[in-house]
Image (cartoon, rainbow over all chains, first blue to last red):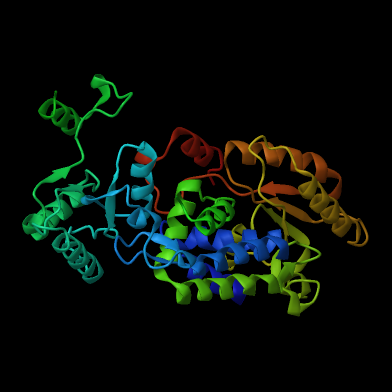
Length: 201
Length: 201
């Protein structure tokens, strides 16, 4: 009943983050309805992504044309002894948007819900340890900022990270806990308010 | 900061149904991370969609290779005097899966939230009226089933449809209202329970 090409596209699209089988089918029909011009422009944007690669130092996504290291890792103004560990490229972008961080990054990859590090994540931590060793004379970062989500699996991930990175950083910090800007005391949940109390200044 | 090809893909993907700008960016980074093999297989599935077209009678999506009319419209076993009007191709598929409908369809397109018909939907209704006129001798469908969602805008759409199609159908019906199978009286909302009472049999 459903055309094969709809099924095939829906199966591929359902593997993308946050897209379920129903939405994938809906998108397939939408594109078929919109017609060839729409399909071609999406296909061209999609193919454009193959011009991207990972920075060999921080694993951020960057254009192949820029070489092996991303603009942040190549920038001598950015302090190589202060590194923020984030899960995703979009987390890195959010931190960059604050304009308040002049260190470098390590993009770790999305943590599993059990907080255990996957093989690729372990490989990236090894690379981070190498980066620490290259810092003269102590072979340690001055500061490692664990910028993971303040969620249950983020906590577990942070514990693993601290364990692995302790010998490679003089100081390990985490993002502050507290009331978000614009947040109201009355409506904050207990955990958030507790965090805000503990980090009062 | 964000590579141009990520921005370009995210802008295209954010136009797809149910995908917002944040998720679109996340998908772009995901694909860039997964690499060229993944991108190529999604691109190939995407290009496959250009082999689809709309049935000239019911507007269902069908392979170009099958001609101008879809398998249902070409099937002499399917009663052309009973037509179900649905919003989306996926609604048609859901009705087909029941195995209880042997009439034909009109895929209307997704209704706007104000229930007013858009130009393309009006064009499809005109086509439906033509289909009615071709039925000998009365130029009317025996039954037109309005299979729209039982939501506020579905109600509004149904009113427009009844108005437009009244002269072209001996009988206009709507999908029954009631408790879903497996539904419990205690947990049904008032509207649903009211509908179930009204349609008791």
